[in-house]
Length: 306
Length: 207
Image (cartoon, rainbow over all chains, first blue to last red; front, side, top):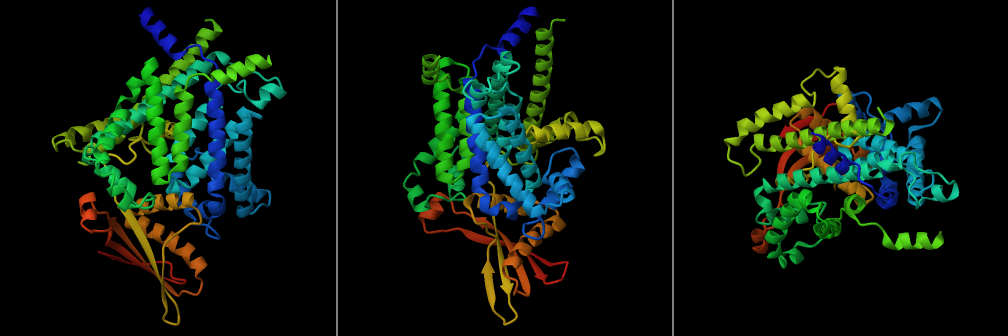
């Protein structure tokens, strides 16, 4: 029993430096910035009320209330804004700017914990109120920001550490939070791969073809894709096997790097071939934070500086 | 008990709780696919998967009444942690794609056609999610509400139109062999709704 406990403890609380956390902070900061910039012109349309937007918020928030009244939503902020004399449109603009600012702050590492918390909250409000217009990228951003705000920030590369000499409160849990991210990714890929294996279309490549010609993901002309038809069955099986084997591959020293490269390539291809750039970026950021080896170059420069 | 040991135990308990929820939700979603016969597994798996799906729902407190505080607490946690659904994107197969066309009728008899659209590619992806939601729902009133929502925003850009006919259908995509033989995307009519200015309820028409 004691041995089992010790093994679990050494698995869950390994010694770890904060390179991975810097990667997660900078990557998610960039993701938040690109998320708001990509929706700049449609922000009020997607999240606004009947006056200038789709008015899907009313339905999403109504459905959310039947599940739990405690899940953050834009409606809360709109109510507060109304008390302060702000119109819904002004408030949505303020939220857009706030997300852009906290995303930028996360990139440089200025007040990282407060910014991570704010980014998580505001993004979650937007996702839950815009539930009808949300997709996979939102779920992974919420997961990433949730872990980021709970991790021991600031990391050593953040501006906060250099300017204000701030240190994290519990650096001994750096390894724990990286482990949480790794285990979560294992479940994400394993169940994603399992569900794909249960579909007939992934074994003969027809699902890849369908995914690539299905609007709005039809970025590449089908005439061009036809020339590569011999690759589809192989690529479909490779995707299934890679996702299914991810929880095994990431624990070996050699296989981890191979797995990281293959998974990042897969997401890069999804991003480029299907126009899902934000989805690709968030998955690459999560994988790099979870699996990438320490930044040797950065350590050398830090040592030189010190 | 020493502080670091106590802290580690708390972290361990949270870890187990968090991942128990993730595994349960992922299993529930996979079992749902099997239970609804959407996988390559033989039909004999359906009833077993349906029962296991119910067990997973019980574990997630979803069988409790909507006002139950335990159910609400669990659901709140699932939402704030981003673990409220599984990870079967494009699985087991790539889902059907949908298309919505608005037929705008003007007082002078002119007719224009519009698609729900956004100004950016990122927002177009989100509108596609909304169309998928419209196509997936089995609730007629919800479908009508969502179509009307999109029709209203189109109306704002075309205030002169007196009626809008919303035609909703599914796209049938060709297989790679069909494509090589000249077949292209086709469109299957599913529903149509007529909206008039000032009229709250639409006149639906099904295929």
